[in-house]
Image (cartoon, rainbow, N blue to C red):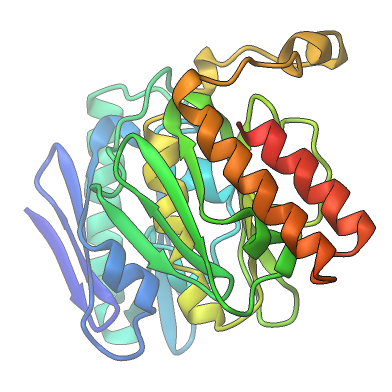
Amino acid sequence: MAEIIQRDGTWAFDGTTVRITPGLHRSVPLFRQTYGEIAVPLEAVASIVFEPERKRGRLRMRLREGADPLLQATGGRLPDPADPYRLTVDVDRAGVAEYVAEEIRHALLLDQIPREPTKTYLLPGPPVPVSVRSSDGTVSFDGTQVRIDWSDTSDRVKRATGPRIINAGDLVQVEWLPNSGYEDGFLRFVTRETVFSKLPPEKDPYALDLWGSARRDLLTALVATAVTARLPHPSARPVVDSTDRAQLTAPVRPPADHHDVLLRRLRELGELHRDGVLTDEEFAMTKAVVLRGF
């Protein structure tokens, strides 16, 4: 067993699995503490290095492309402190860190682990159900459906469309960009009907606009990862180009049991328009979104 325990967290390697446990110190980001322990199978590891510095060093692990739904969902955009595959190491523990890295590198060579992209996810992602409250609303995923309940500060176009419920089977992909504190982020659920939509996140009823607490909004990556883990692996997804547009955007006849819900939603939008809550442009756009969603 090769193990290093730091305030930032603990890495333990037993020859087959690298077990990463976040530290409990207040300096450890909320995202890592909430994501919890990660068990990385050796076959998911591409490389590991220890980067010594004058005051502190860092252990960095790189996983094979396509092995982890977290990295797939976040696209390498997690801030460094929130990256679970990075461990801050005190200078007096540099020797231990190098030993852990060397043990993992040795095992990679012995087991002849390839560095090529994987054909399936080797890590499971967070368990479901998972729910996160963000600046734009609350997003939940139970393994089969995504639900978005808008906050009082959400754009009125979003609030006018009501809660958004998306079946996992209708999803094409998830797009996520963190709120950096200087620039807004978003969490967008791309469906067959909205794959070519270009609405800005603040008005897109299939997207959460992340503009509030960067620390809290970062937790939306939990939902993005849980959904991504249950979508087809990137290696199995067909490449979509402009020639597929007609097929992807072909109208879909709504199920009979949705007909009453659709009529009620349209009546509500009409009342909001007549009362002056929605402008002509907002009414037309929201009506189109509601029809497309059903």
